[in-house]
Length: 308
Image: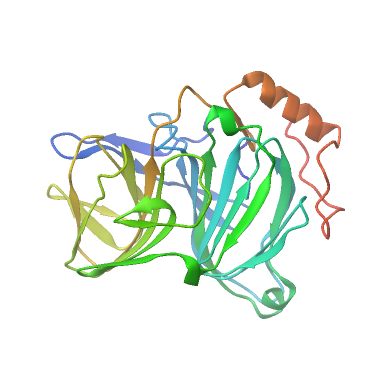
């Protein structure tokens, strides 16, 4: 999906510098209405543009689609990143210019490597559109190391059953990408990556893995505590690089752990394009404007125009 219009966050999430504990920064998601579909934008923020390779993070807030209605993200382009769709409820059909057509359901991972350029769409399928139903999930982008930005585009789908599960006291974790807690996902990441979905029982404690330099926890549902402070849904806790810490579930909680190794150098972001080179982004803008990206088979008619 694609909702970032400019090179800087137009509406920056609220941030709070935490002191005296393991938390470096707290980012509070900022709600946005996308024509009846509500999201909470977290990354990028003014004070923090990336956590590890994660450069974009949206919470698709749970809502019920009435029969006859659905999500329609028209074909649009990407370069220099992987898009990652992960659902808690609902279904979305992914199509891309490689010819991929893949429904995604809760627990699965759709990982689209844009590389030097790809176009895709994400829509509610015909059967789900007829029946309606709940939709809830996370959309994120993972930026590439500079030497991988111009690789050939590719698409990976990993069903929930192929992703490793880790059981800790009072917590169930699914490792979506990269490695954590002694388990490794089959997703083909380009740099050291942390991405985990955790379900934590009320009263349980979740140790935050220290295998990665940069780490954050996003509270999807419930309430967690750290150093006598509590954080509710929509909060992203960014931890200090050298901190060993644990979060405490004040209530039953659903969490996303994300991070990894920091990328070398800065990244430019404009609309759906991410690159270490501003000139490369200008070229991508021109290519989309002139219709030089490949079409999406099965979704060739509509497209999202380049913002001007």
